[in-house]
Image (cartoon, rainbow, N blue to C red; front, side, top):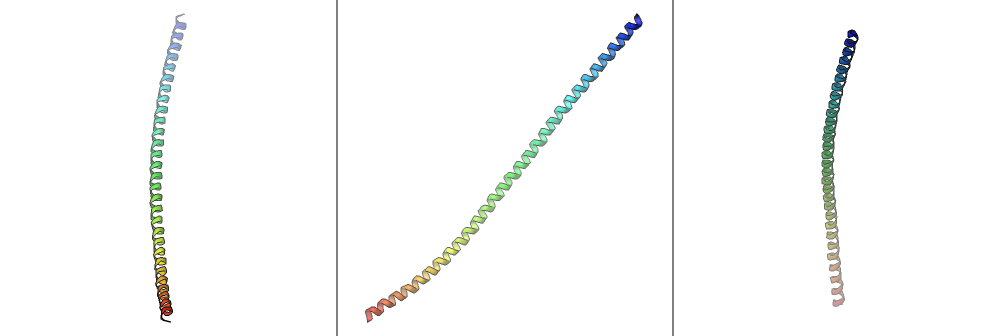
Length: 109
């Protein structure tokens, strides 16, 4: 009977040892899983920050370009307006001279 008892004790010890090994492996796996999740979250956050920063810079660049384009268009518009104003003024002087000459001719006749 002692051999049987020894066999049961050995089986129980091996069972306890196997249980301990499984628990250690489970704990290690859980630790690795948590570390991987933290690392993945960190990588995601870094990628998000980088993407957000790039998007903000692109928005700034687009706004700057829009302002430059608007200023250029305004310069063209003002230049055209000045040219038109000069042409109108020249026509007005020419017409004024004709009108004065016409009035003088009417008075002198």
